[in-house]
Length: 526
Image 1 (cartoon, rainbow, N blue to C red):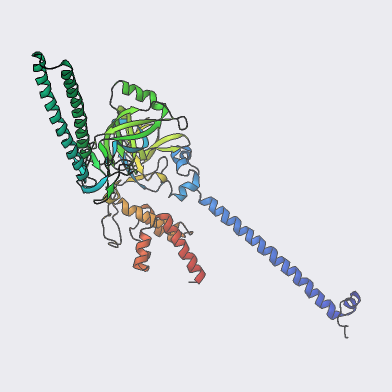
Image 2 (image 1 turned 180 degrees about the vertical axis):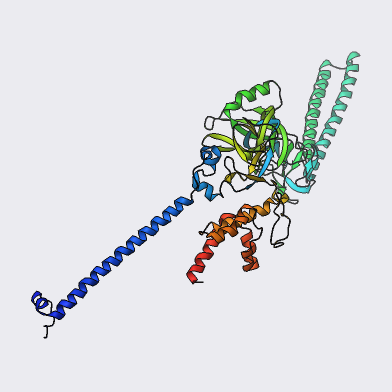
């Protein structure tokens, strides 16, 4: 029996056996494909649920210490504990003891050094500059010769004035002798009275002329003295503003040289107006207020002086008041217009409880510190911060003198965490001076905290980015808990320069580096 081609109509399907068979196979294929898709979806959902249950089972139970300031500061909760190494992992920390000491109450500001007196030395007579008699940047004394201007023109004028004066003095002397003769003749009635009076008038006239000529001589001498340029004040000479051979004028803006008086030297700075009553009271009581000048970075002290005075008005734009301090500056460490950091000491708190400033942390419940207990665990102590003096801060709280507070490594701590005390200075830590690539395994003693910390860092980096089976977990446990290796064995398979670079990475950088290498290896199929 031959079926019509194509057999697509309902009549053909009913009358043609071959068409019926083909339709049946097509219907069963569609059913089978639907079943396969449904099974795949069910398997995917089951796998996702199993993965979620496994992640939930890995998370440790919430501890009561998570609500403490230390737990909140370190991330708190179950994820934070797993991320930073777990509550049972020993963390390396640096500590400092609590002590009692005097703490200075100071104000920090920024100021500028100003010379006590600044003088621009200018020529008072226009002429040719013949010589300069000072060294740039060197100290000069008041009255010291600085420069010499050509004096010949003024010397000639002085000589002329002196000649005229001598002539007038001779005439005056002759007139006085004649007056004496006339008086003798008048006494003998041998001379008229009028001639005597005329001679007296001539003498007075010549006396006036002599005074005028004497003034001319004095003026010529004064002008001649201007050719010798001397220092009006003692101080430090600046750079020369004119060279030998040039004509200097009295109106030159720069003059010949500038002298600044730097001993003593002044410091101008501003402080908030809220401190004005205390500062004014201390000044009225003649109590010294020490002022320290530091470099801009605040790491090196330049000089120590005292507060001299304060301005007579508060700046309404900034609500500050200007202060002036004086420094002896015997070592010339301060220069005019130099910008410095200022610390004004207002008071001193005697014998107060103090901790390093780095130990004081701030959390949701206020300020606190970590105290290392006798069993190498840490506990949180709430404190009230006070004045800061350098690296130390005055505090109030439940602390005893001699207790050790954590100053480094606090980012991974929480209440009750186990710690290992290491030196605060990295150069003093165990193994710090060991040669690079020296041993394969580090010291496992308590003092070798640097090596154990490095081993823990490598263990975290190698194991935190991928799930571990029982065998990997067993091999990584000694490195994580017992101190680990200073140099993991898998680093020996790397080039020496790459291995050294990996050794210098932080745990987070090392973890990211390992993850990238694994992704590259997965892409290459190796």
